[in-house]
Image 1 (cartoon, rainbow, N blue to C red):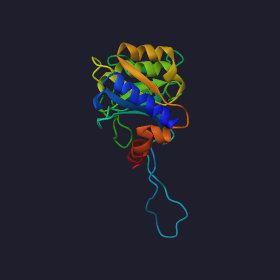
Image 2: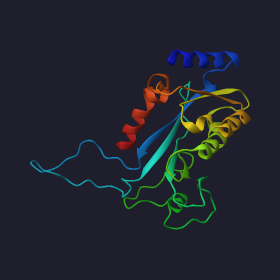
Image 3: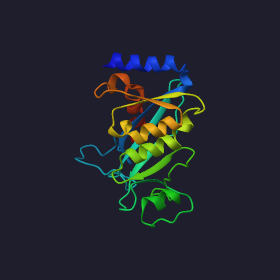
Image 4: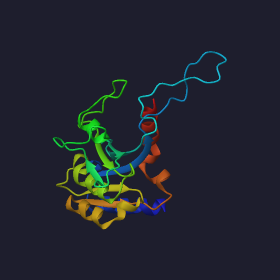
Length: 212
C-alpha cells in the first residue's frame, strides 16, 4: 500500500509538473491545551507535589499542521470545542459580539489566563470552533478555502497529501480543493506512520515543544 500511494503521488507530480513548492502534507494532531512536563522538582522523600497550570489542562484541542516539500511550514490551525447549538464550525470573527464567558470572546479579545499567557496573533495561529474540538467536513472546507492559499500559489496546480480521515474524501471538500487548483492524494488507512511526512518527522516534535 505504501508503494502504491507513493507511486500515485509521483504520477501526479509528473503529470502536473509540480515542484517542491506545490506539494504539501496536512495532518491533525490531538493535544491538550496545557501539557505537563515529564519531570519536576520536589523535596526528597515526598510522595507527591503540586504542579501549577493556567487552568486549561483538561481542555482538549486539535491542531492542524501543514508543511510543503521544500520545508516551508504554514501557520497552524487550532480547533477548540464550542457548545453553541447554533454553531457547527466557525472562525472567530473580528467585530462580532460573543458571550463574555465563551472561548470565542477570550480569543477575540486576546484575554490572558491567570498566569498572563495570551493567545498568539492571527499571523501566528488560526483558530476555529467545532462542537467536538475535532475537524469535520465544514471545518475542512473552511481550512482549504482560507488556509491552503497560504501554503500554495493557487494560480498553479498543487498537490495536498492527506490521511483517510472521513471528511477528506467528502465531495464538498473535493470541490473546494478543485476551485483552488489543488489535487488531493488520500492515503490508505494504516500507512501514515511510513507514508505521511508529518507523522514520520514532525508531529512528535511538535507535541514535545507544546508540552514543554
